[in-house]
Image (cartoon, rainbow, N blue to C red; front, side, top):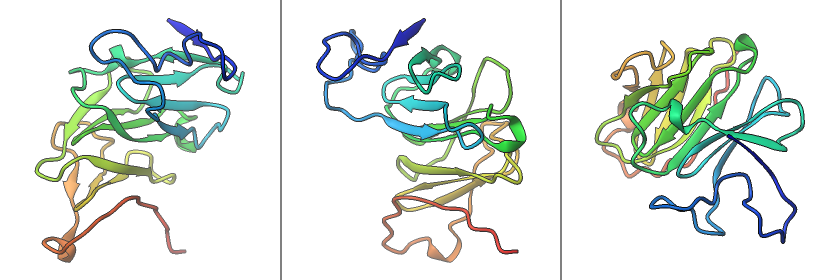
Length: 178
């Protein structure tokens, strides 16, 4: 299903993010958004569902890719990372609570991994030199995957000596030394 964005003030559904049913997004609830790092004309949006812009029309058309998530998320999306120059922009990391869904190619189903005992993931960053390596943070822990989240236990906690301290991570950025 494709949904066309509408101008502000139009009562028509805005991008498919305000749905009917038990998981209805309320007007004003802000979705998580990520621009594709390989093609910034493409965008990923998440809230109660996961949506991807299609084509080169700068986000005018959005398709619902929630059905590719197995099992379906039970929490709202909290963090997204999208695109890599290595994969022509096809890679997706999407966190819903403590679960991270990964799509590393044209395969339709996204793989689910869980980070345990740490609360919701608040940010994800992809290593642009190796798209199967990504980092995620919750309020009190840092995680890394080196296999693109290929298995349910792919995300390893690398918080190290910071563990046990009062932490309040809000974002993560990957800076590589030359």
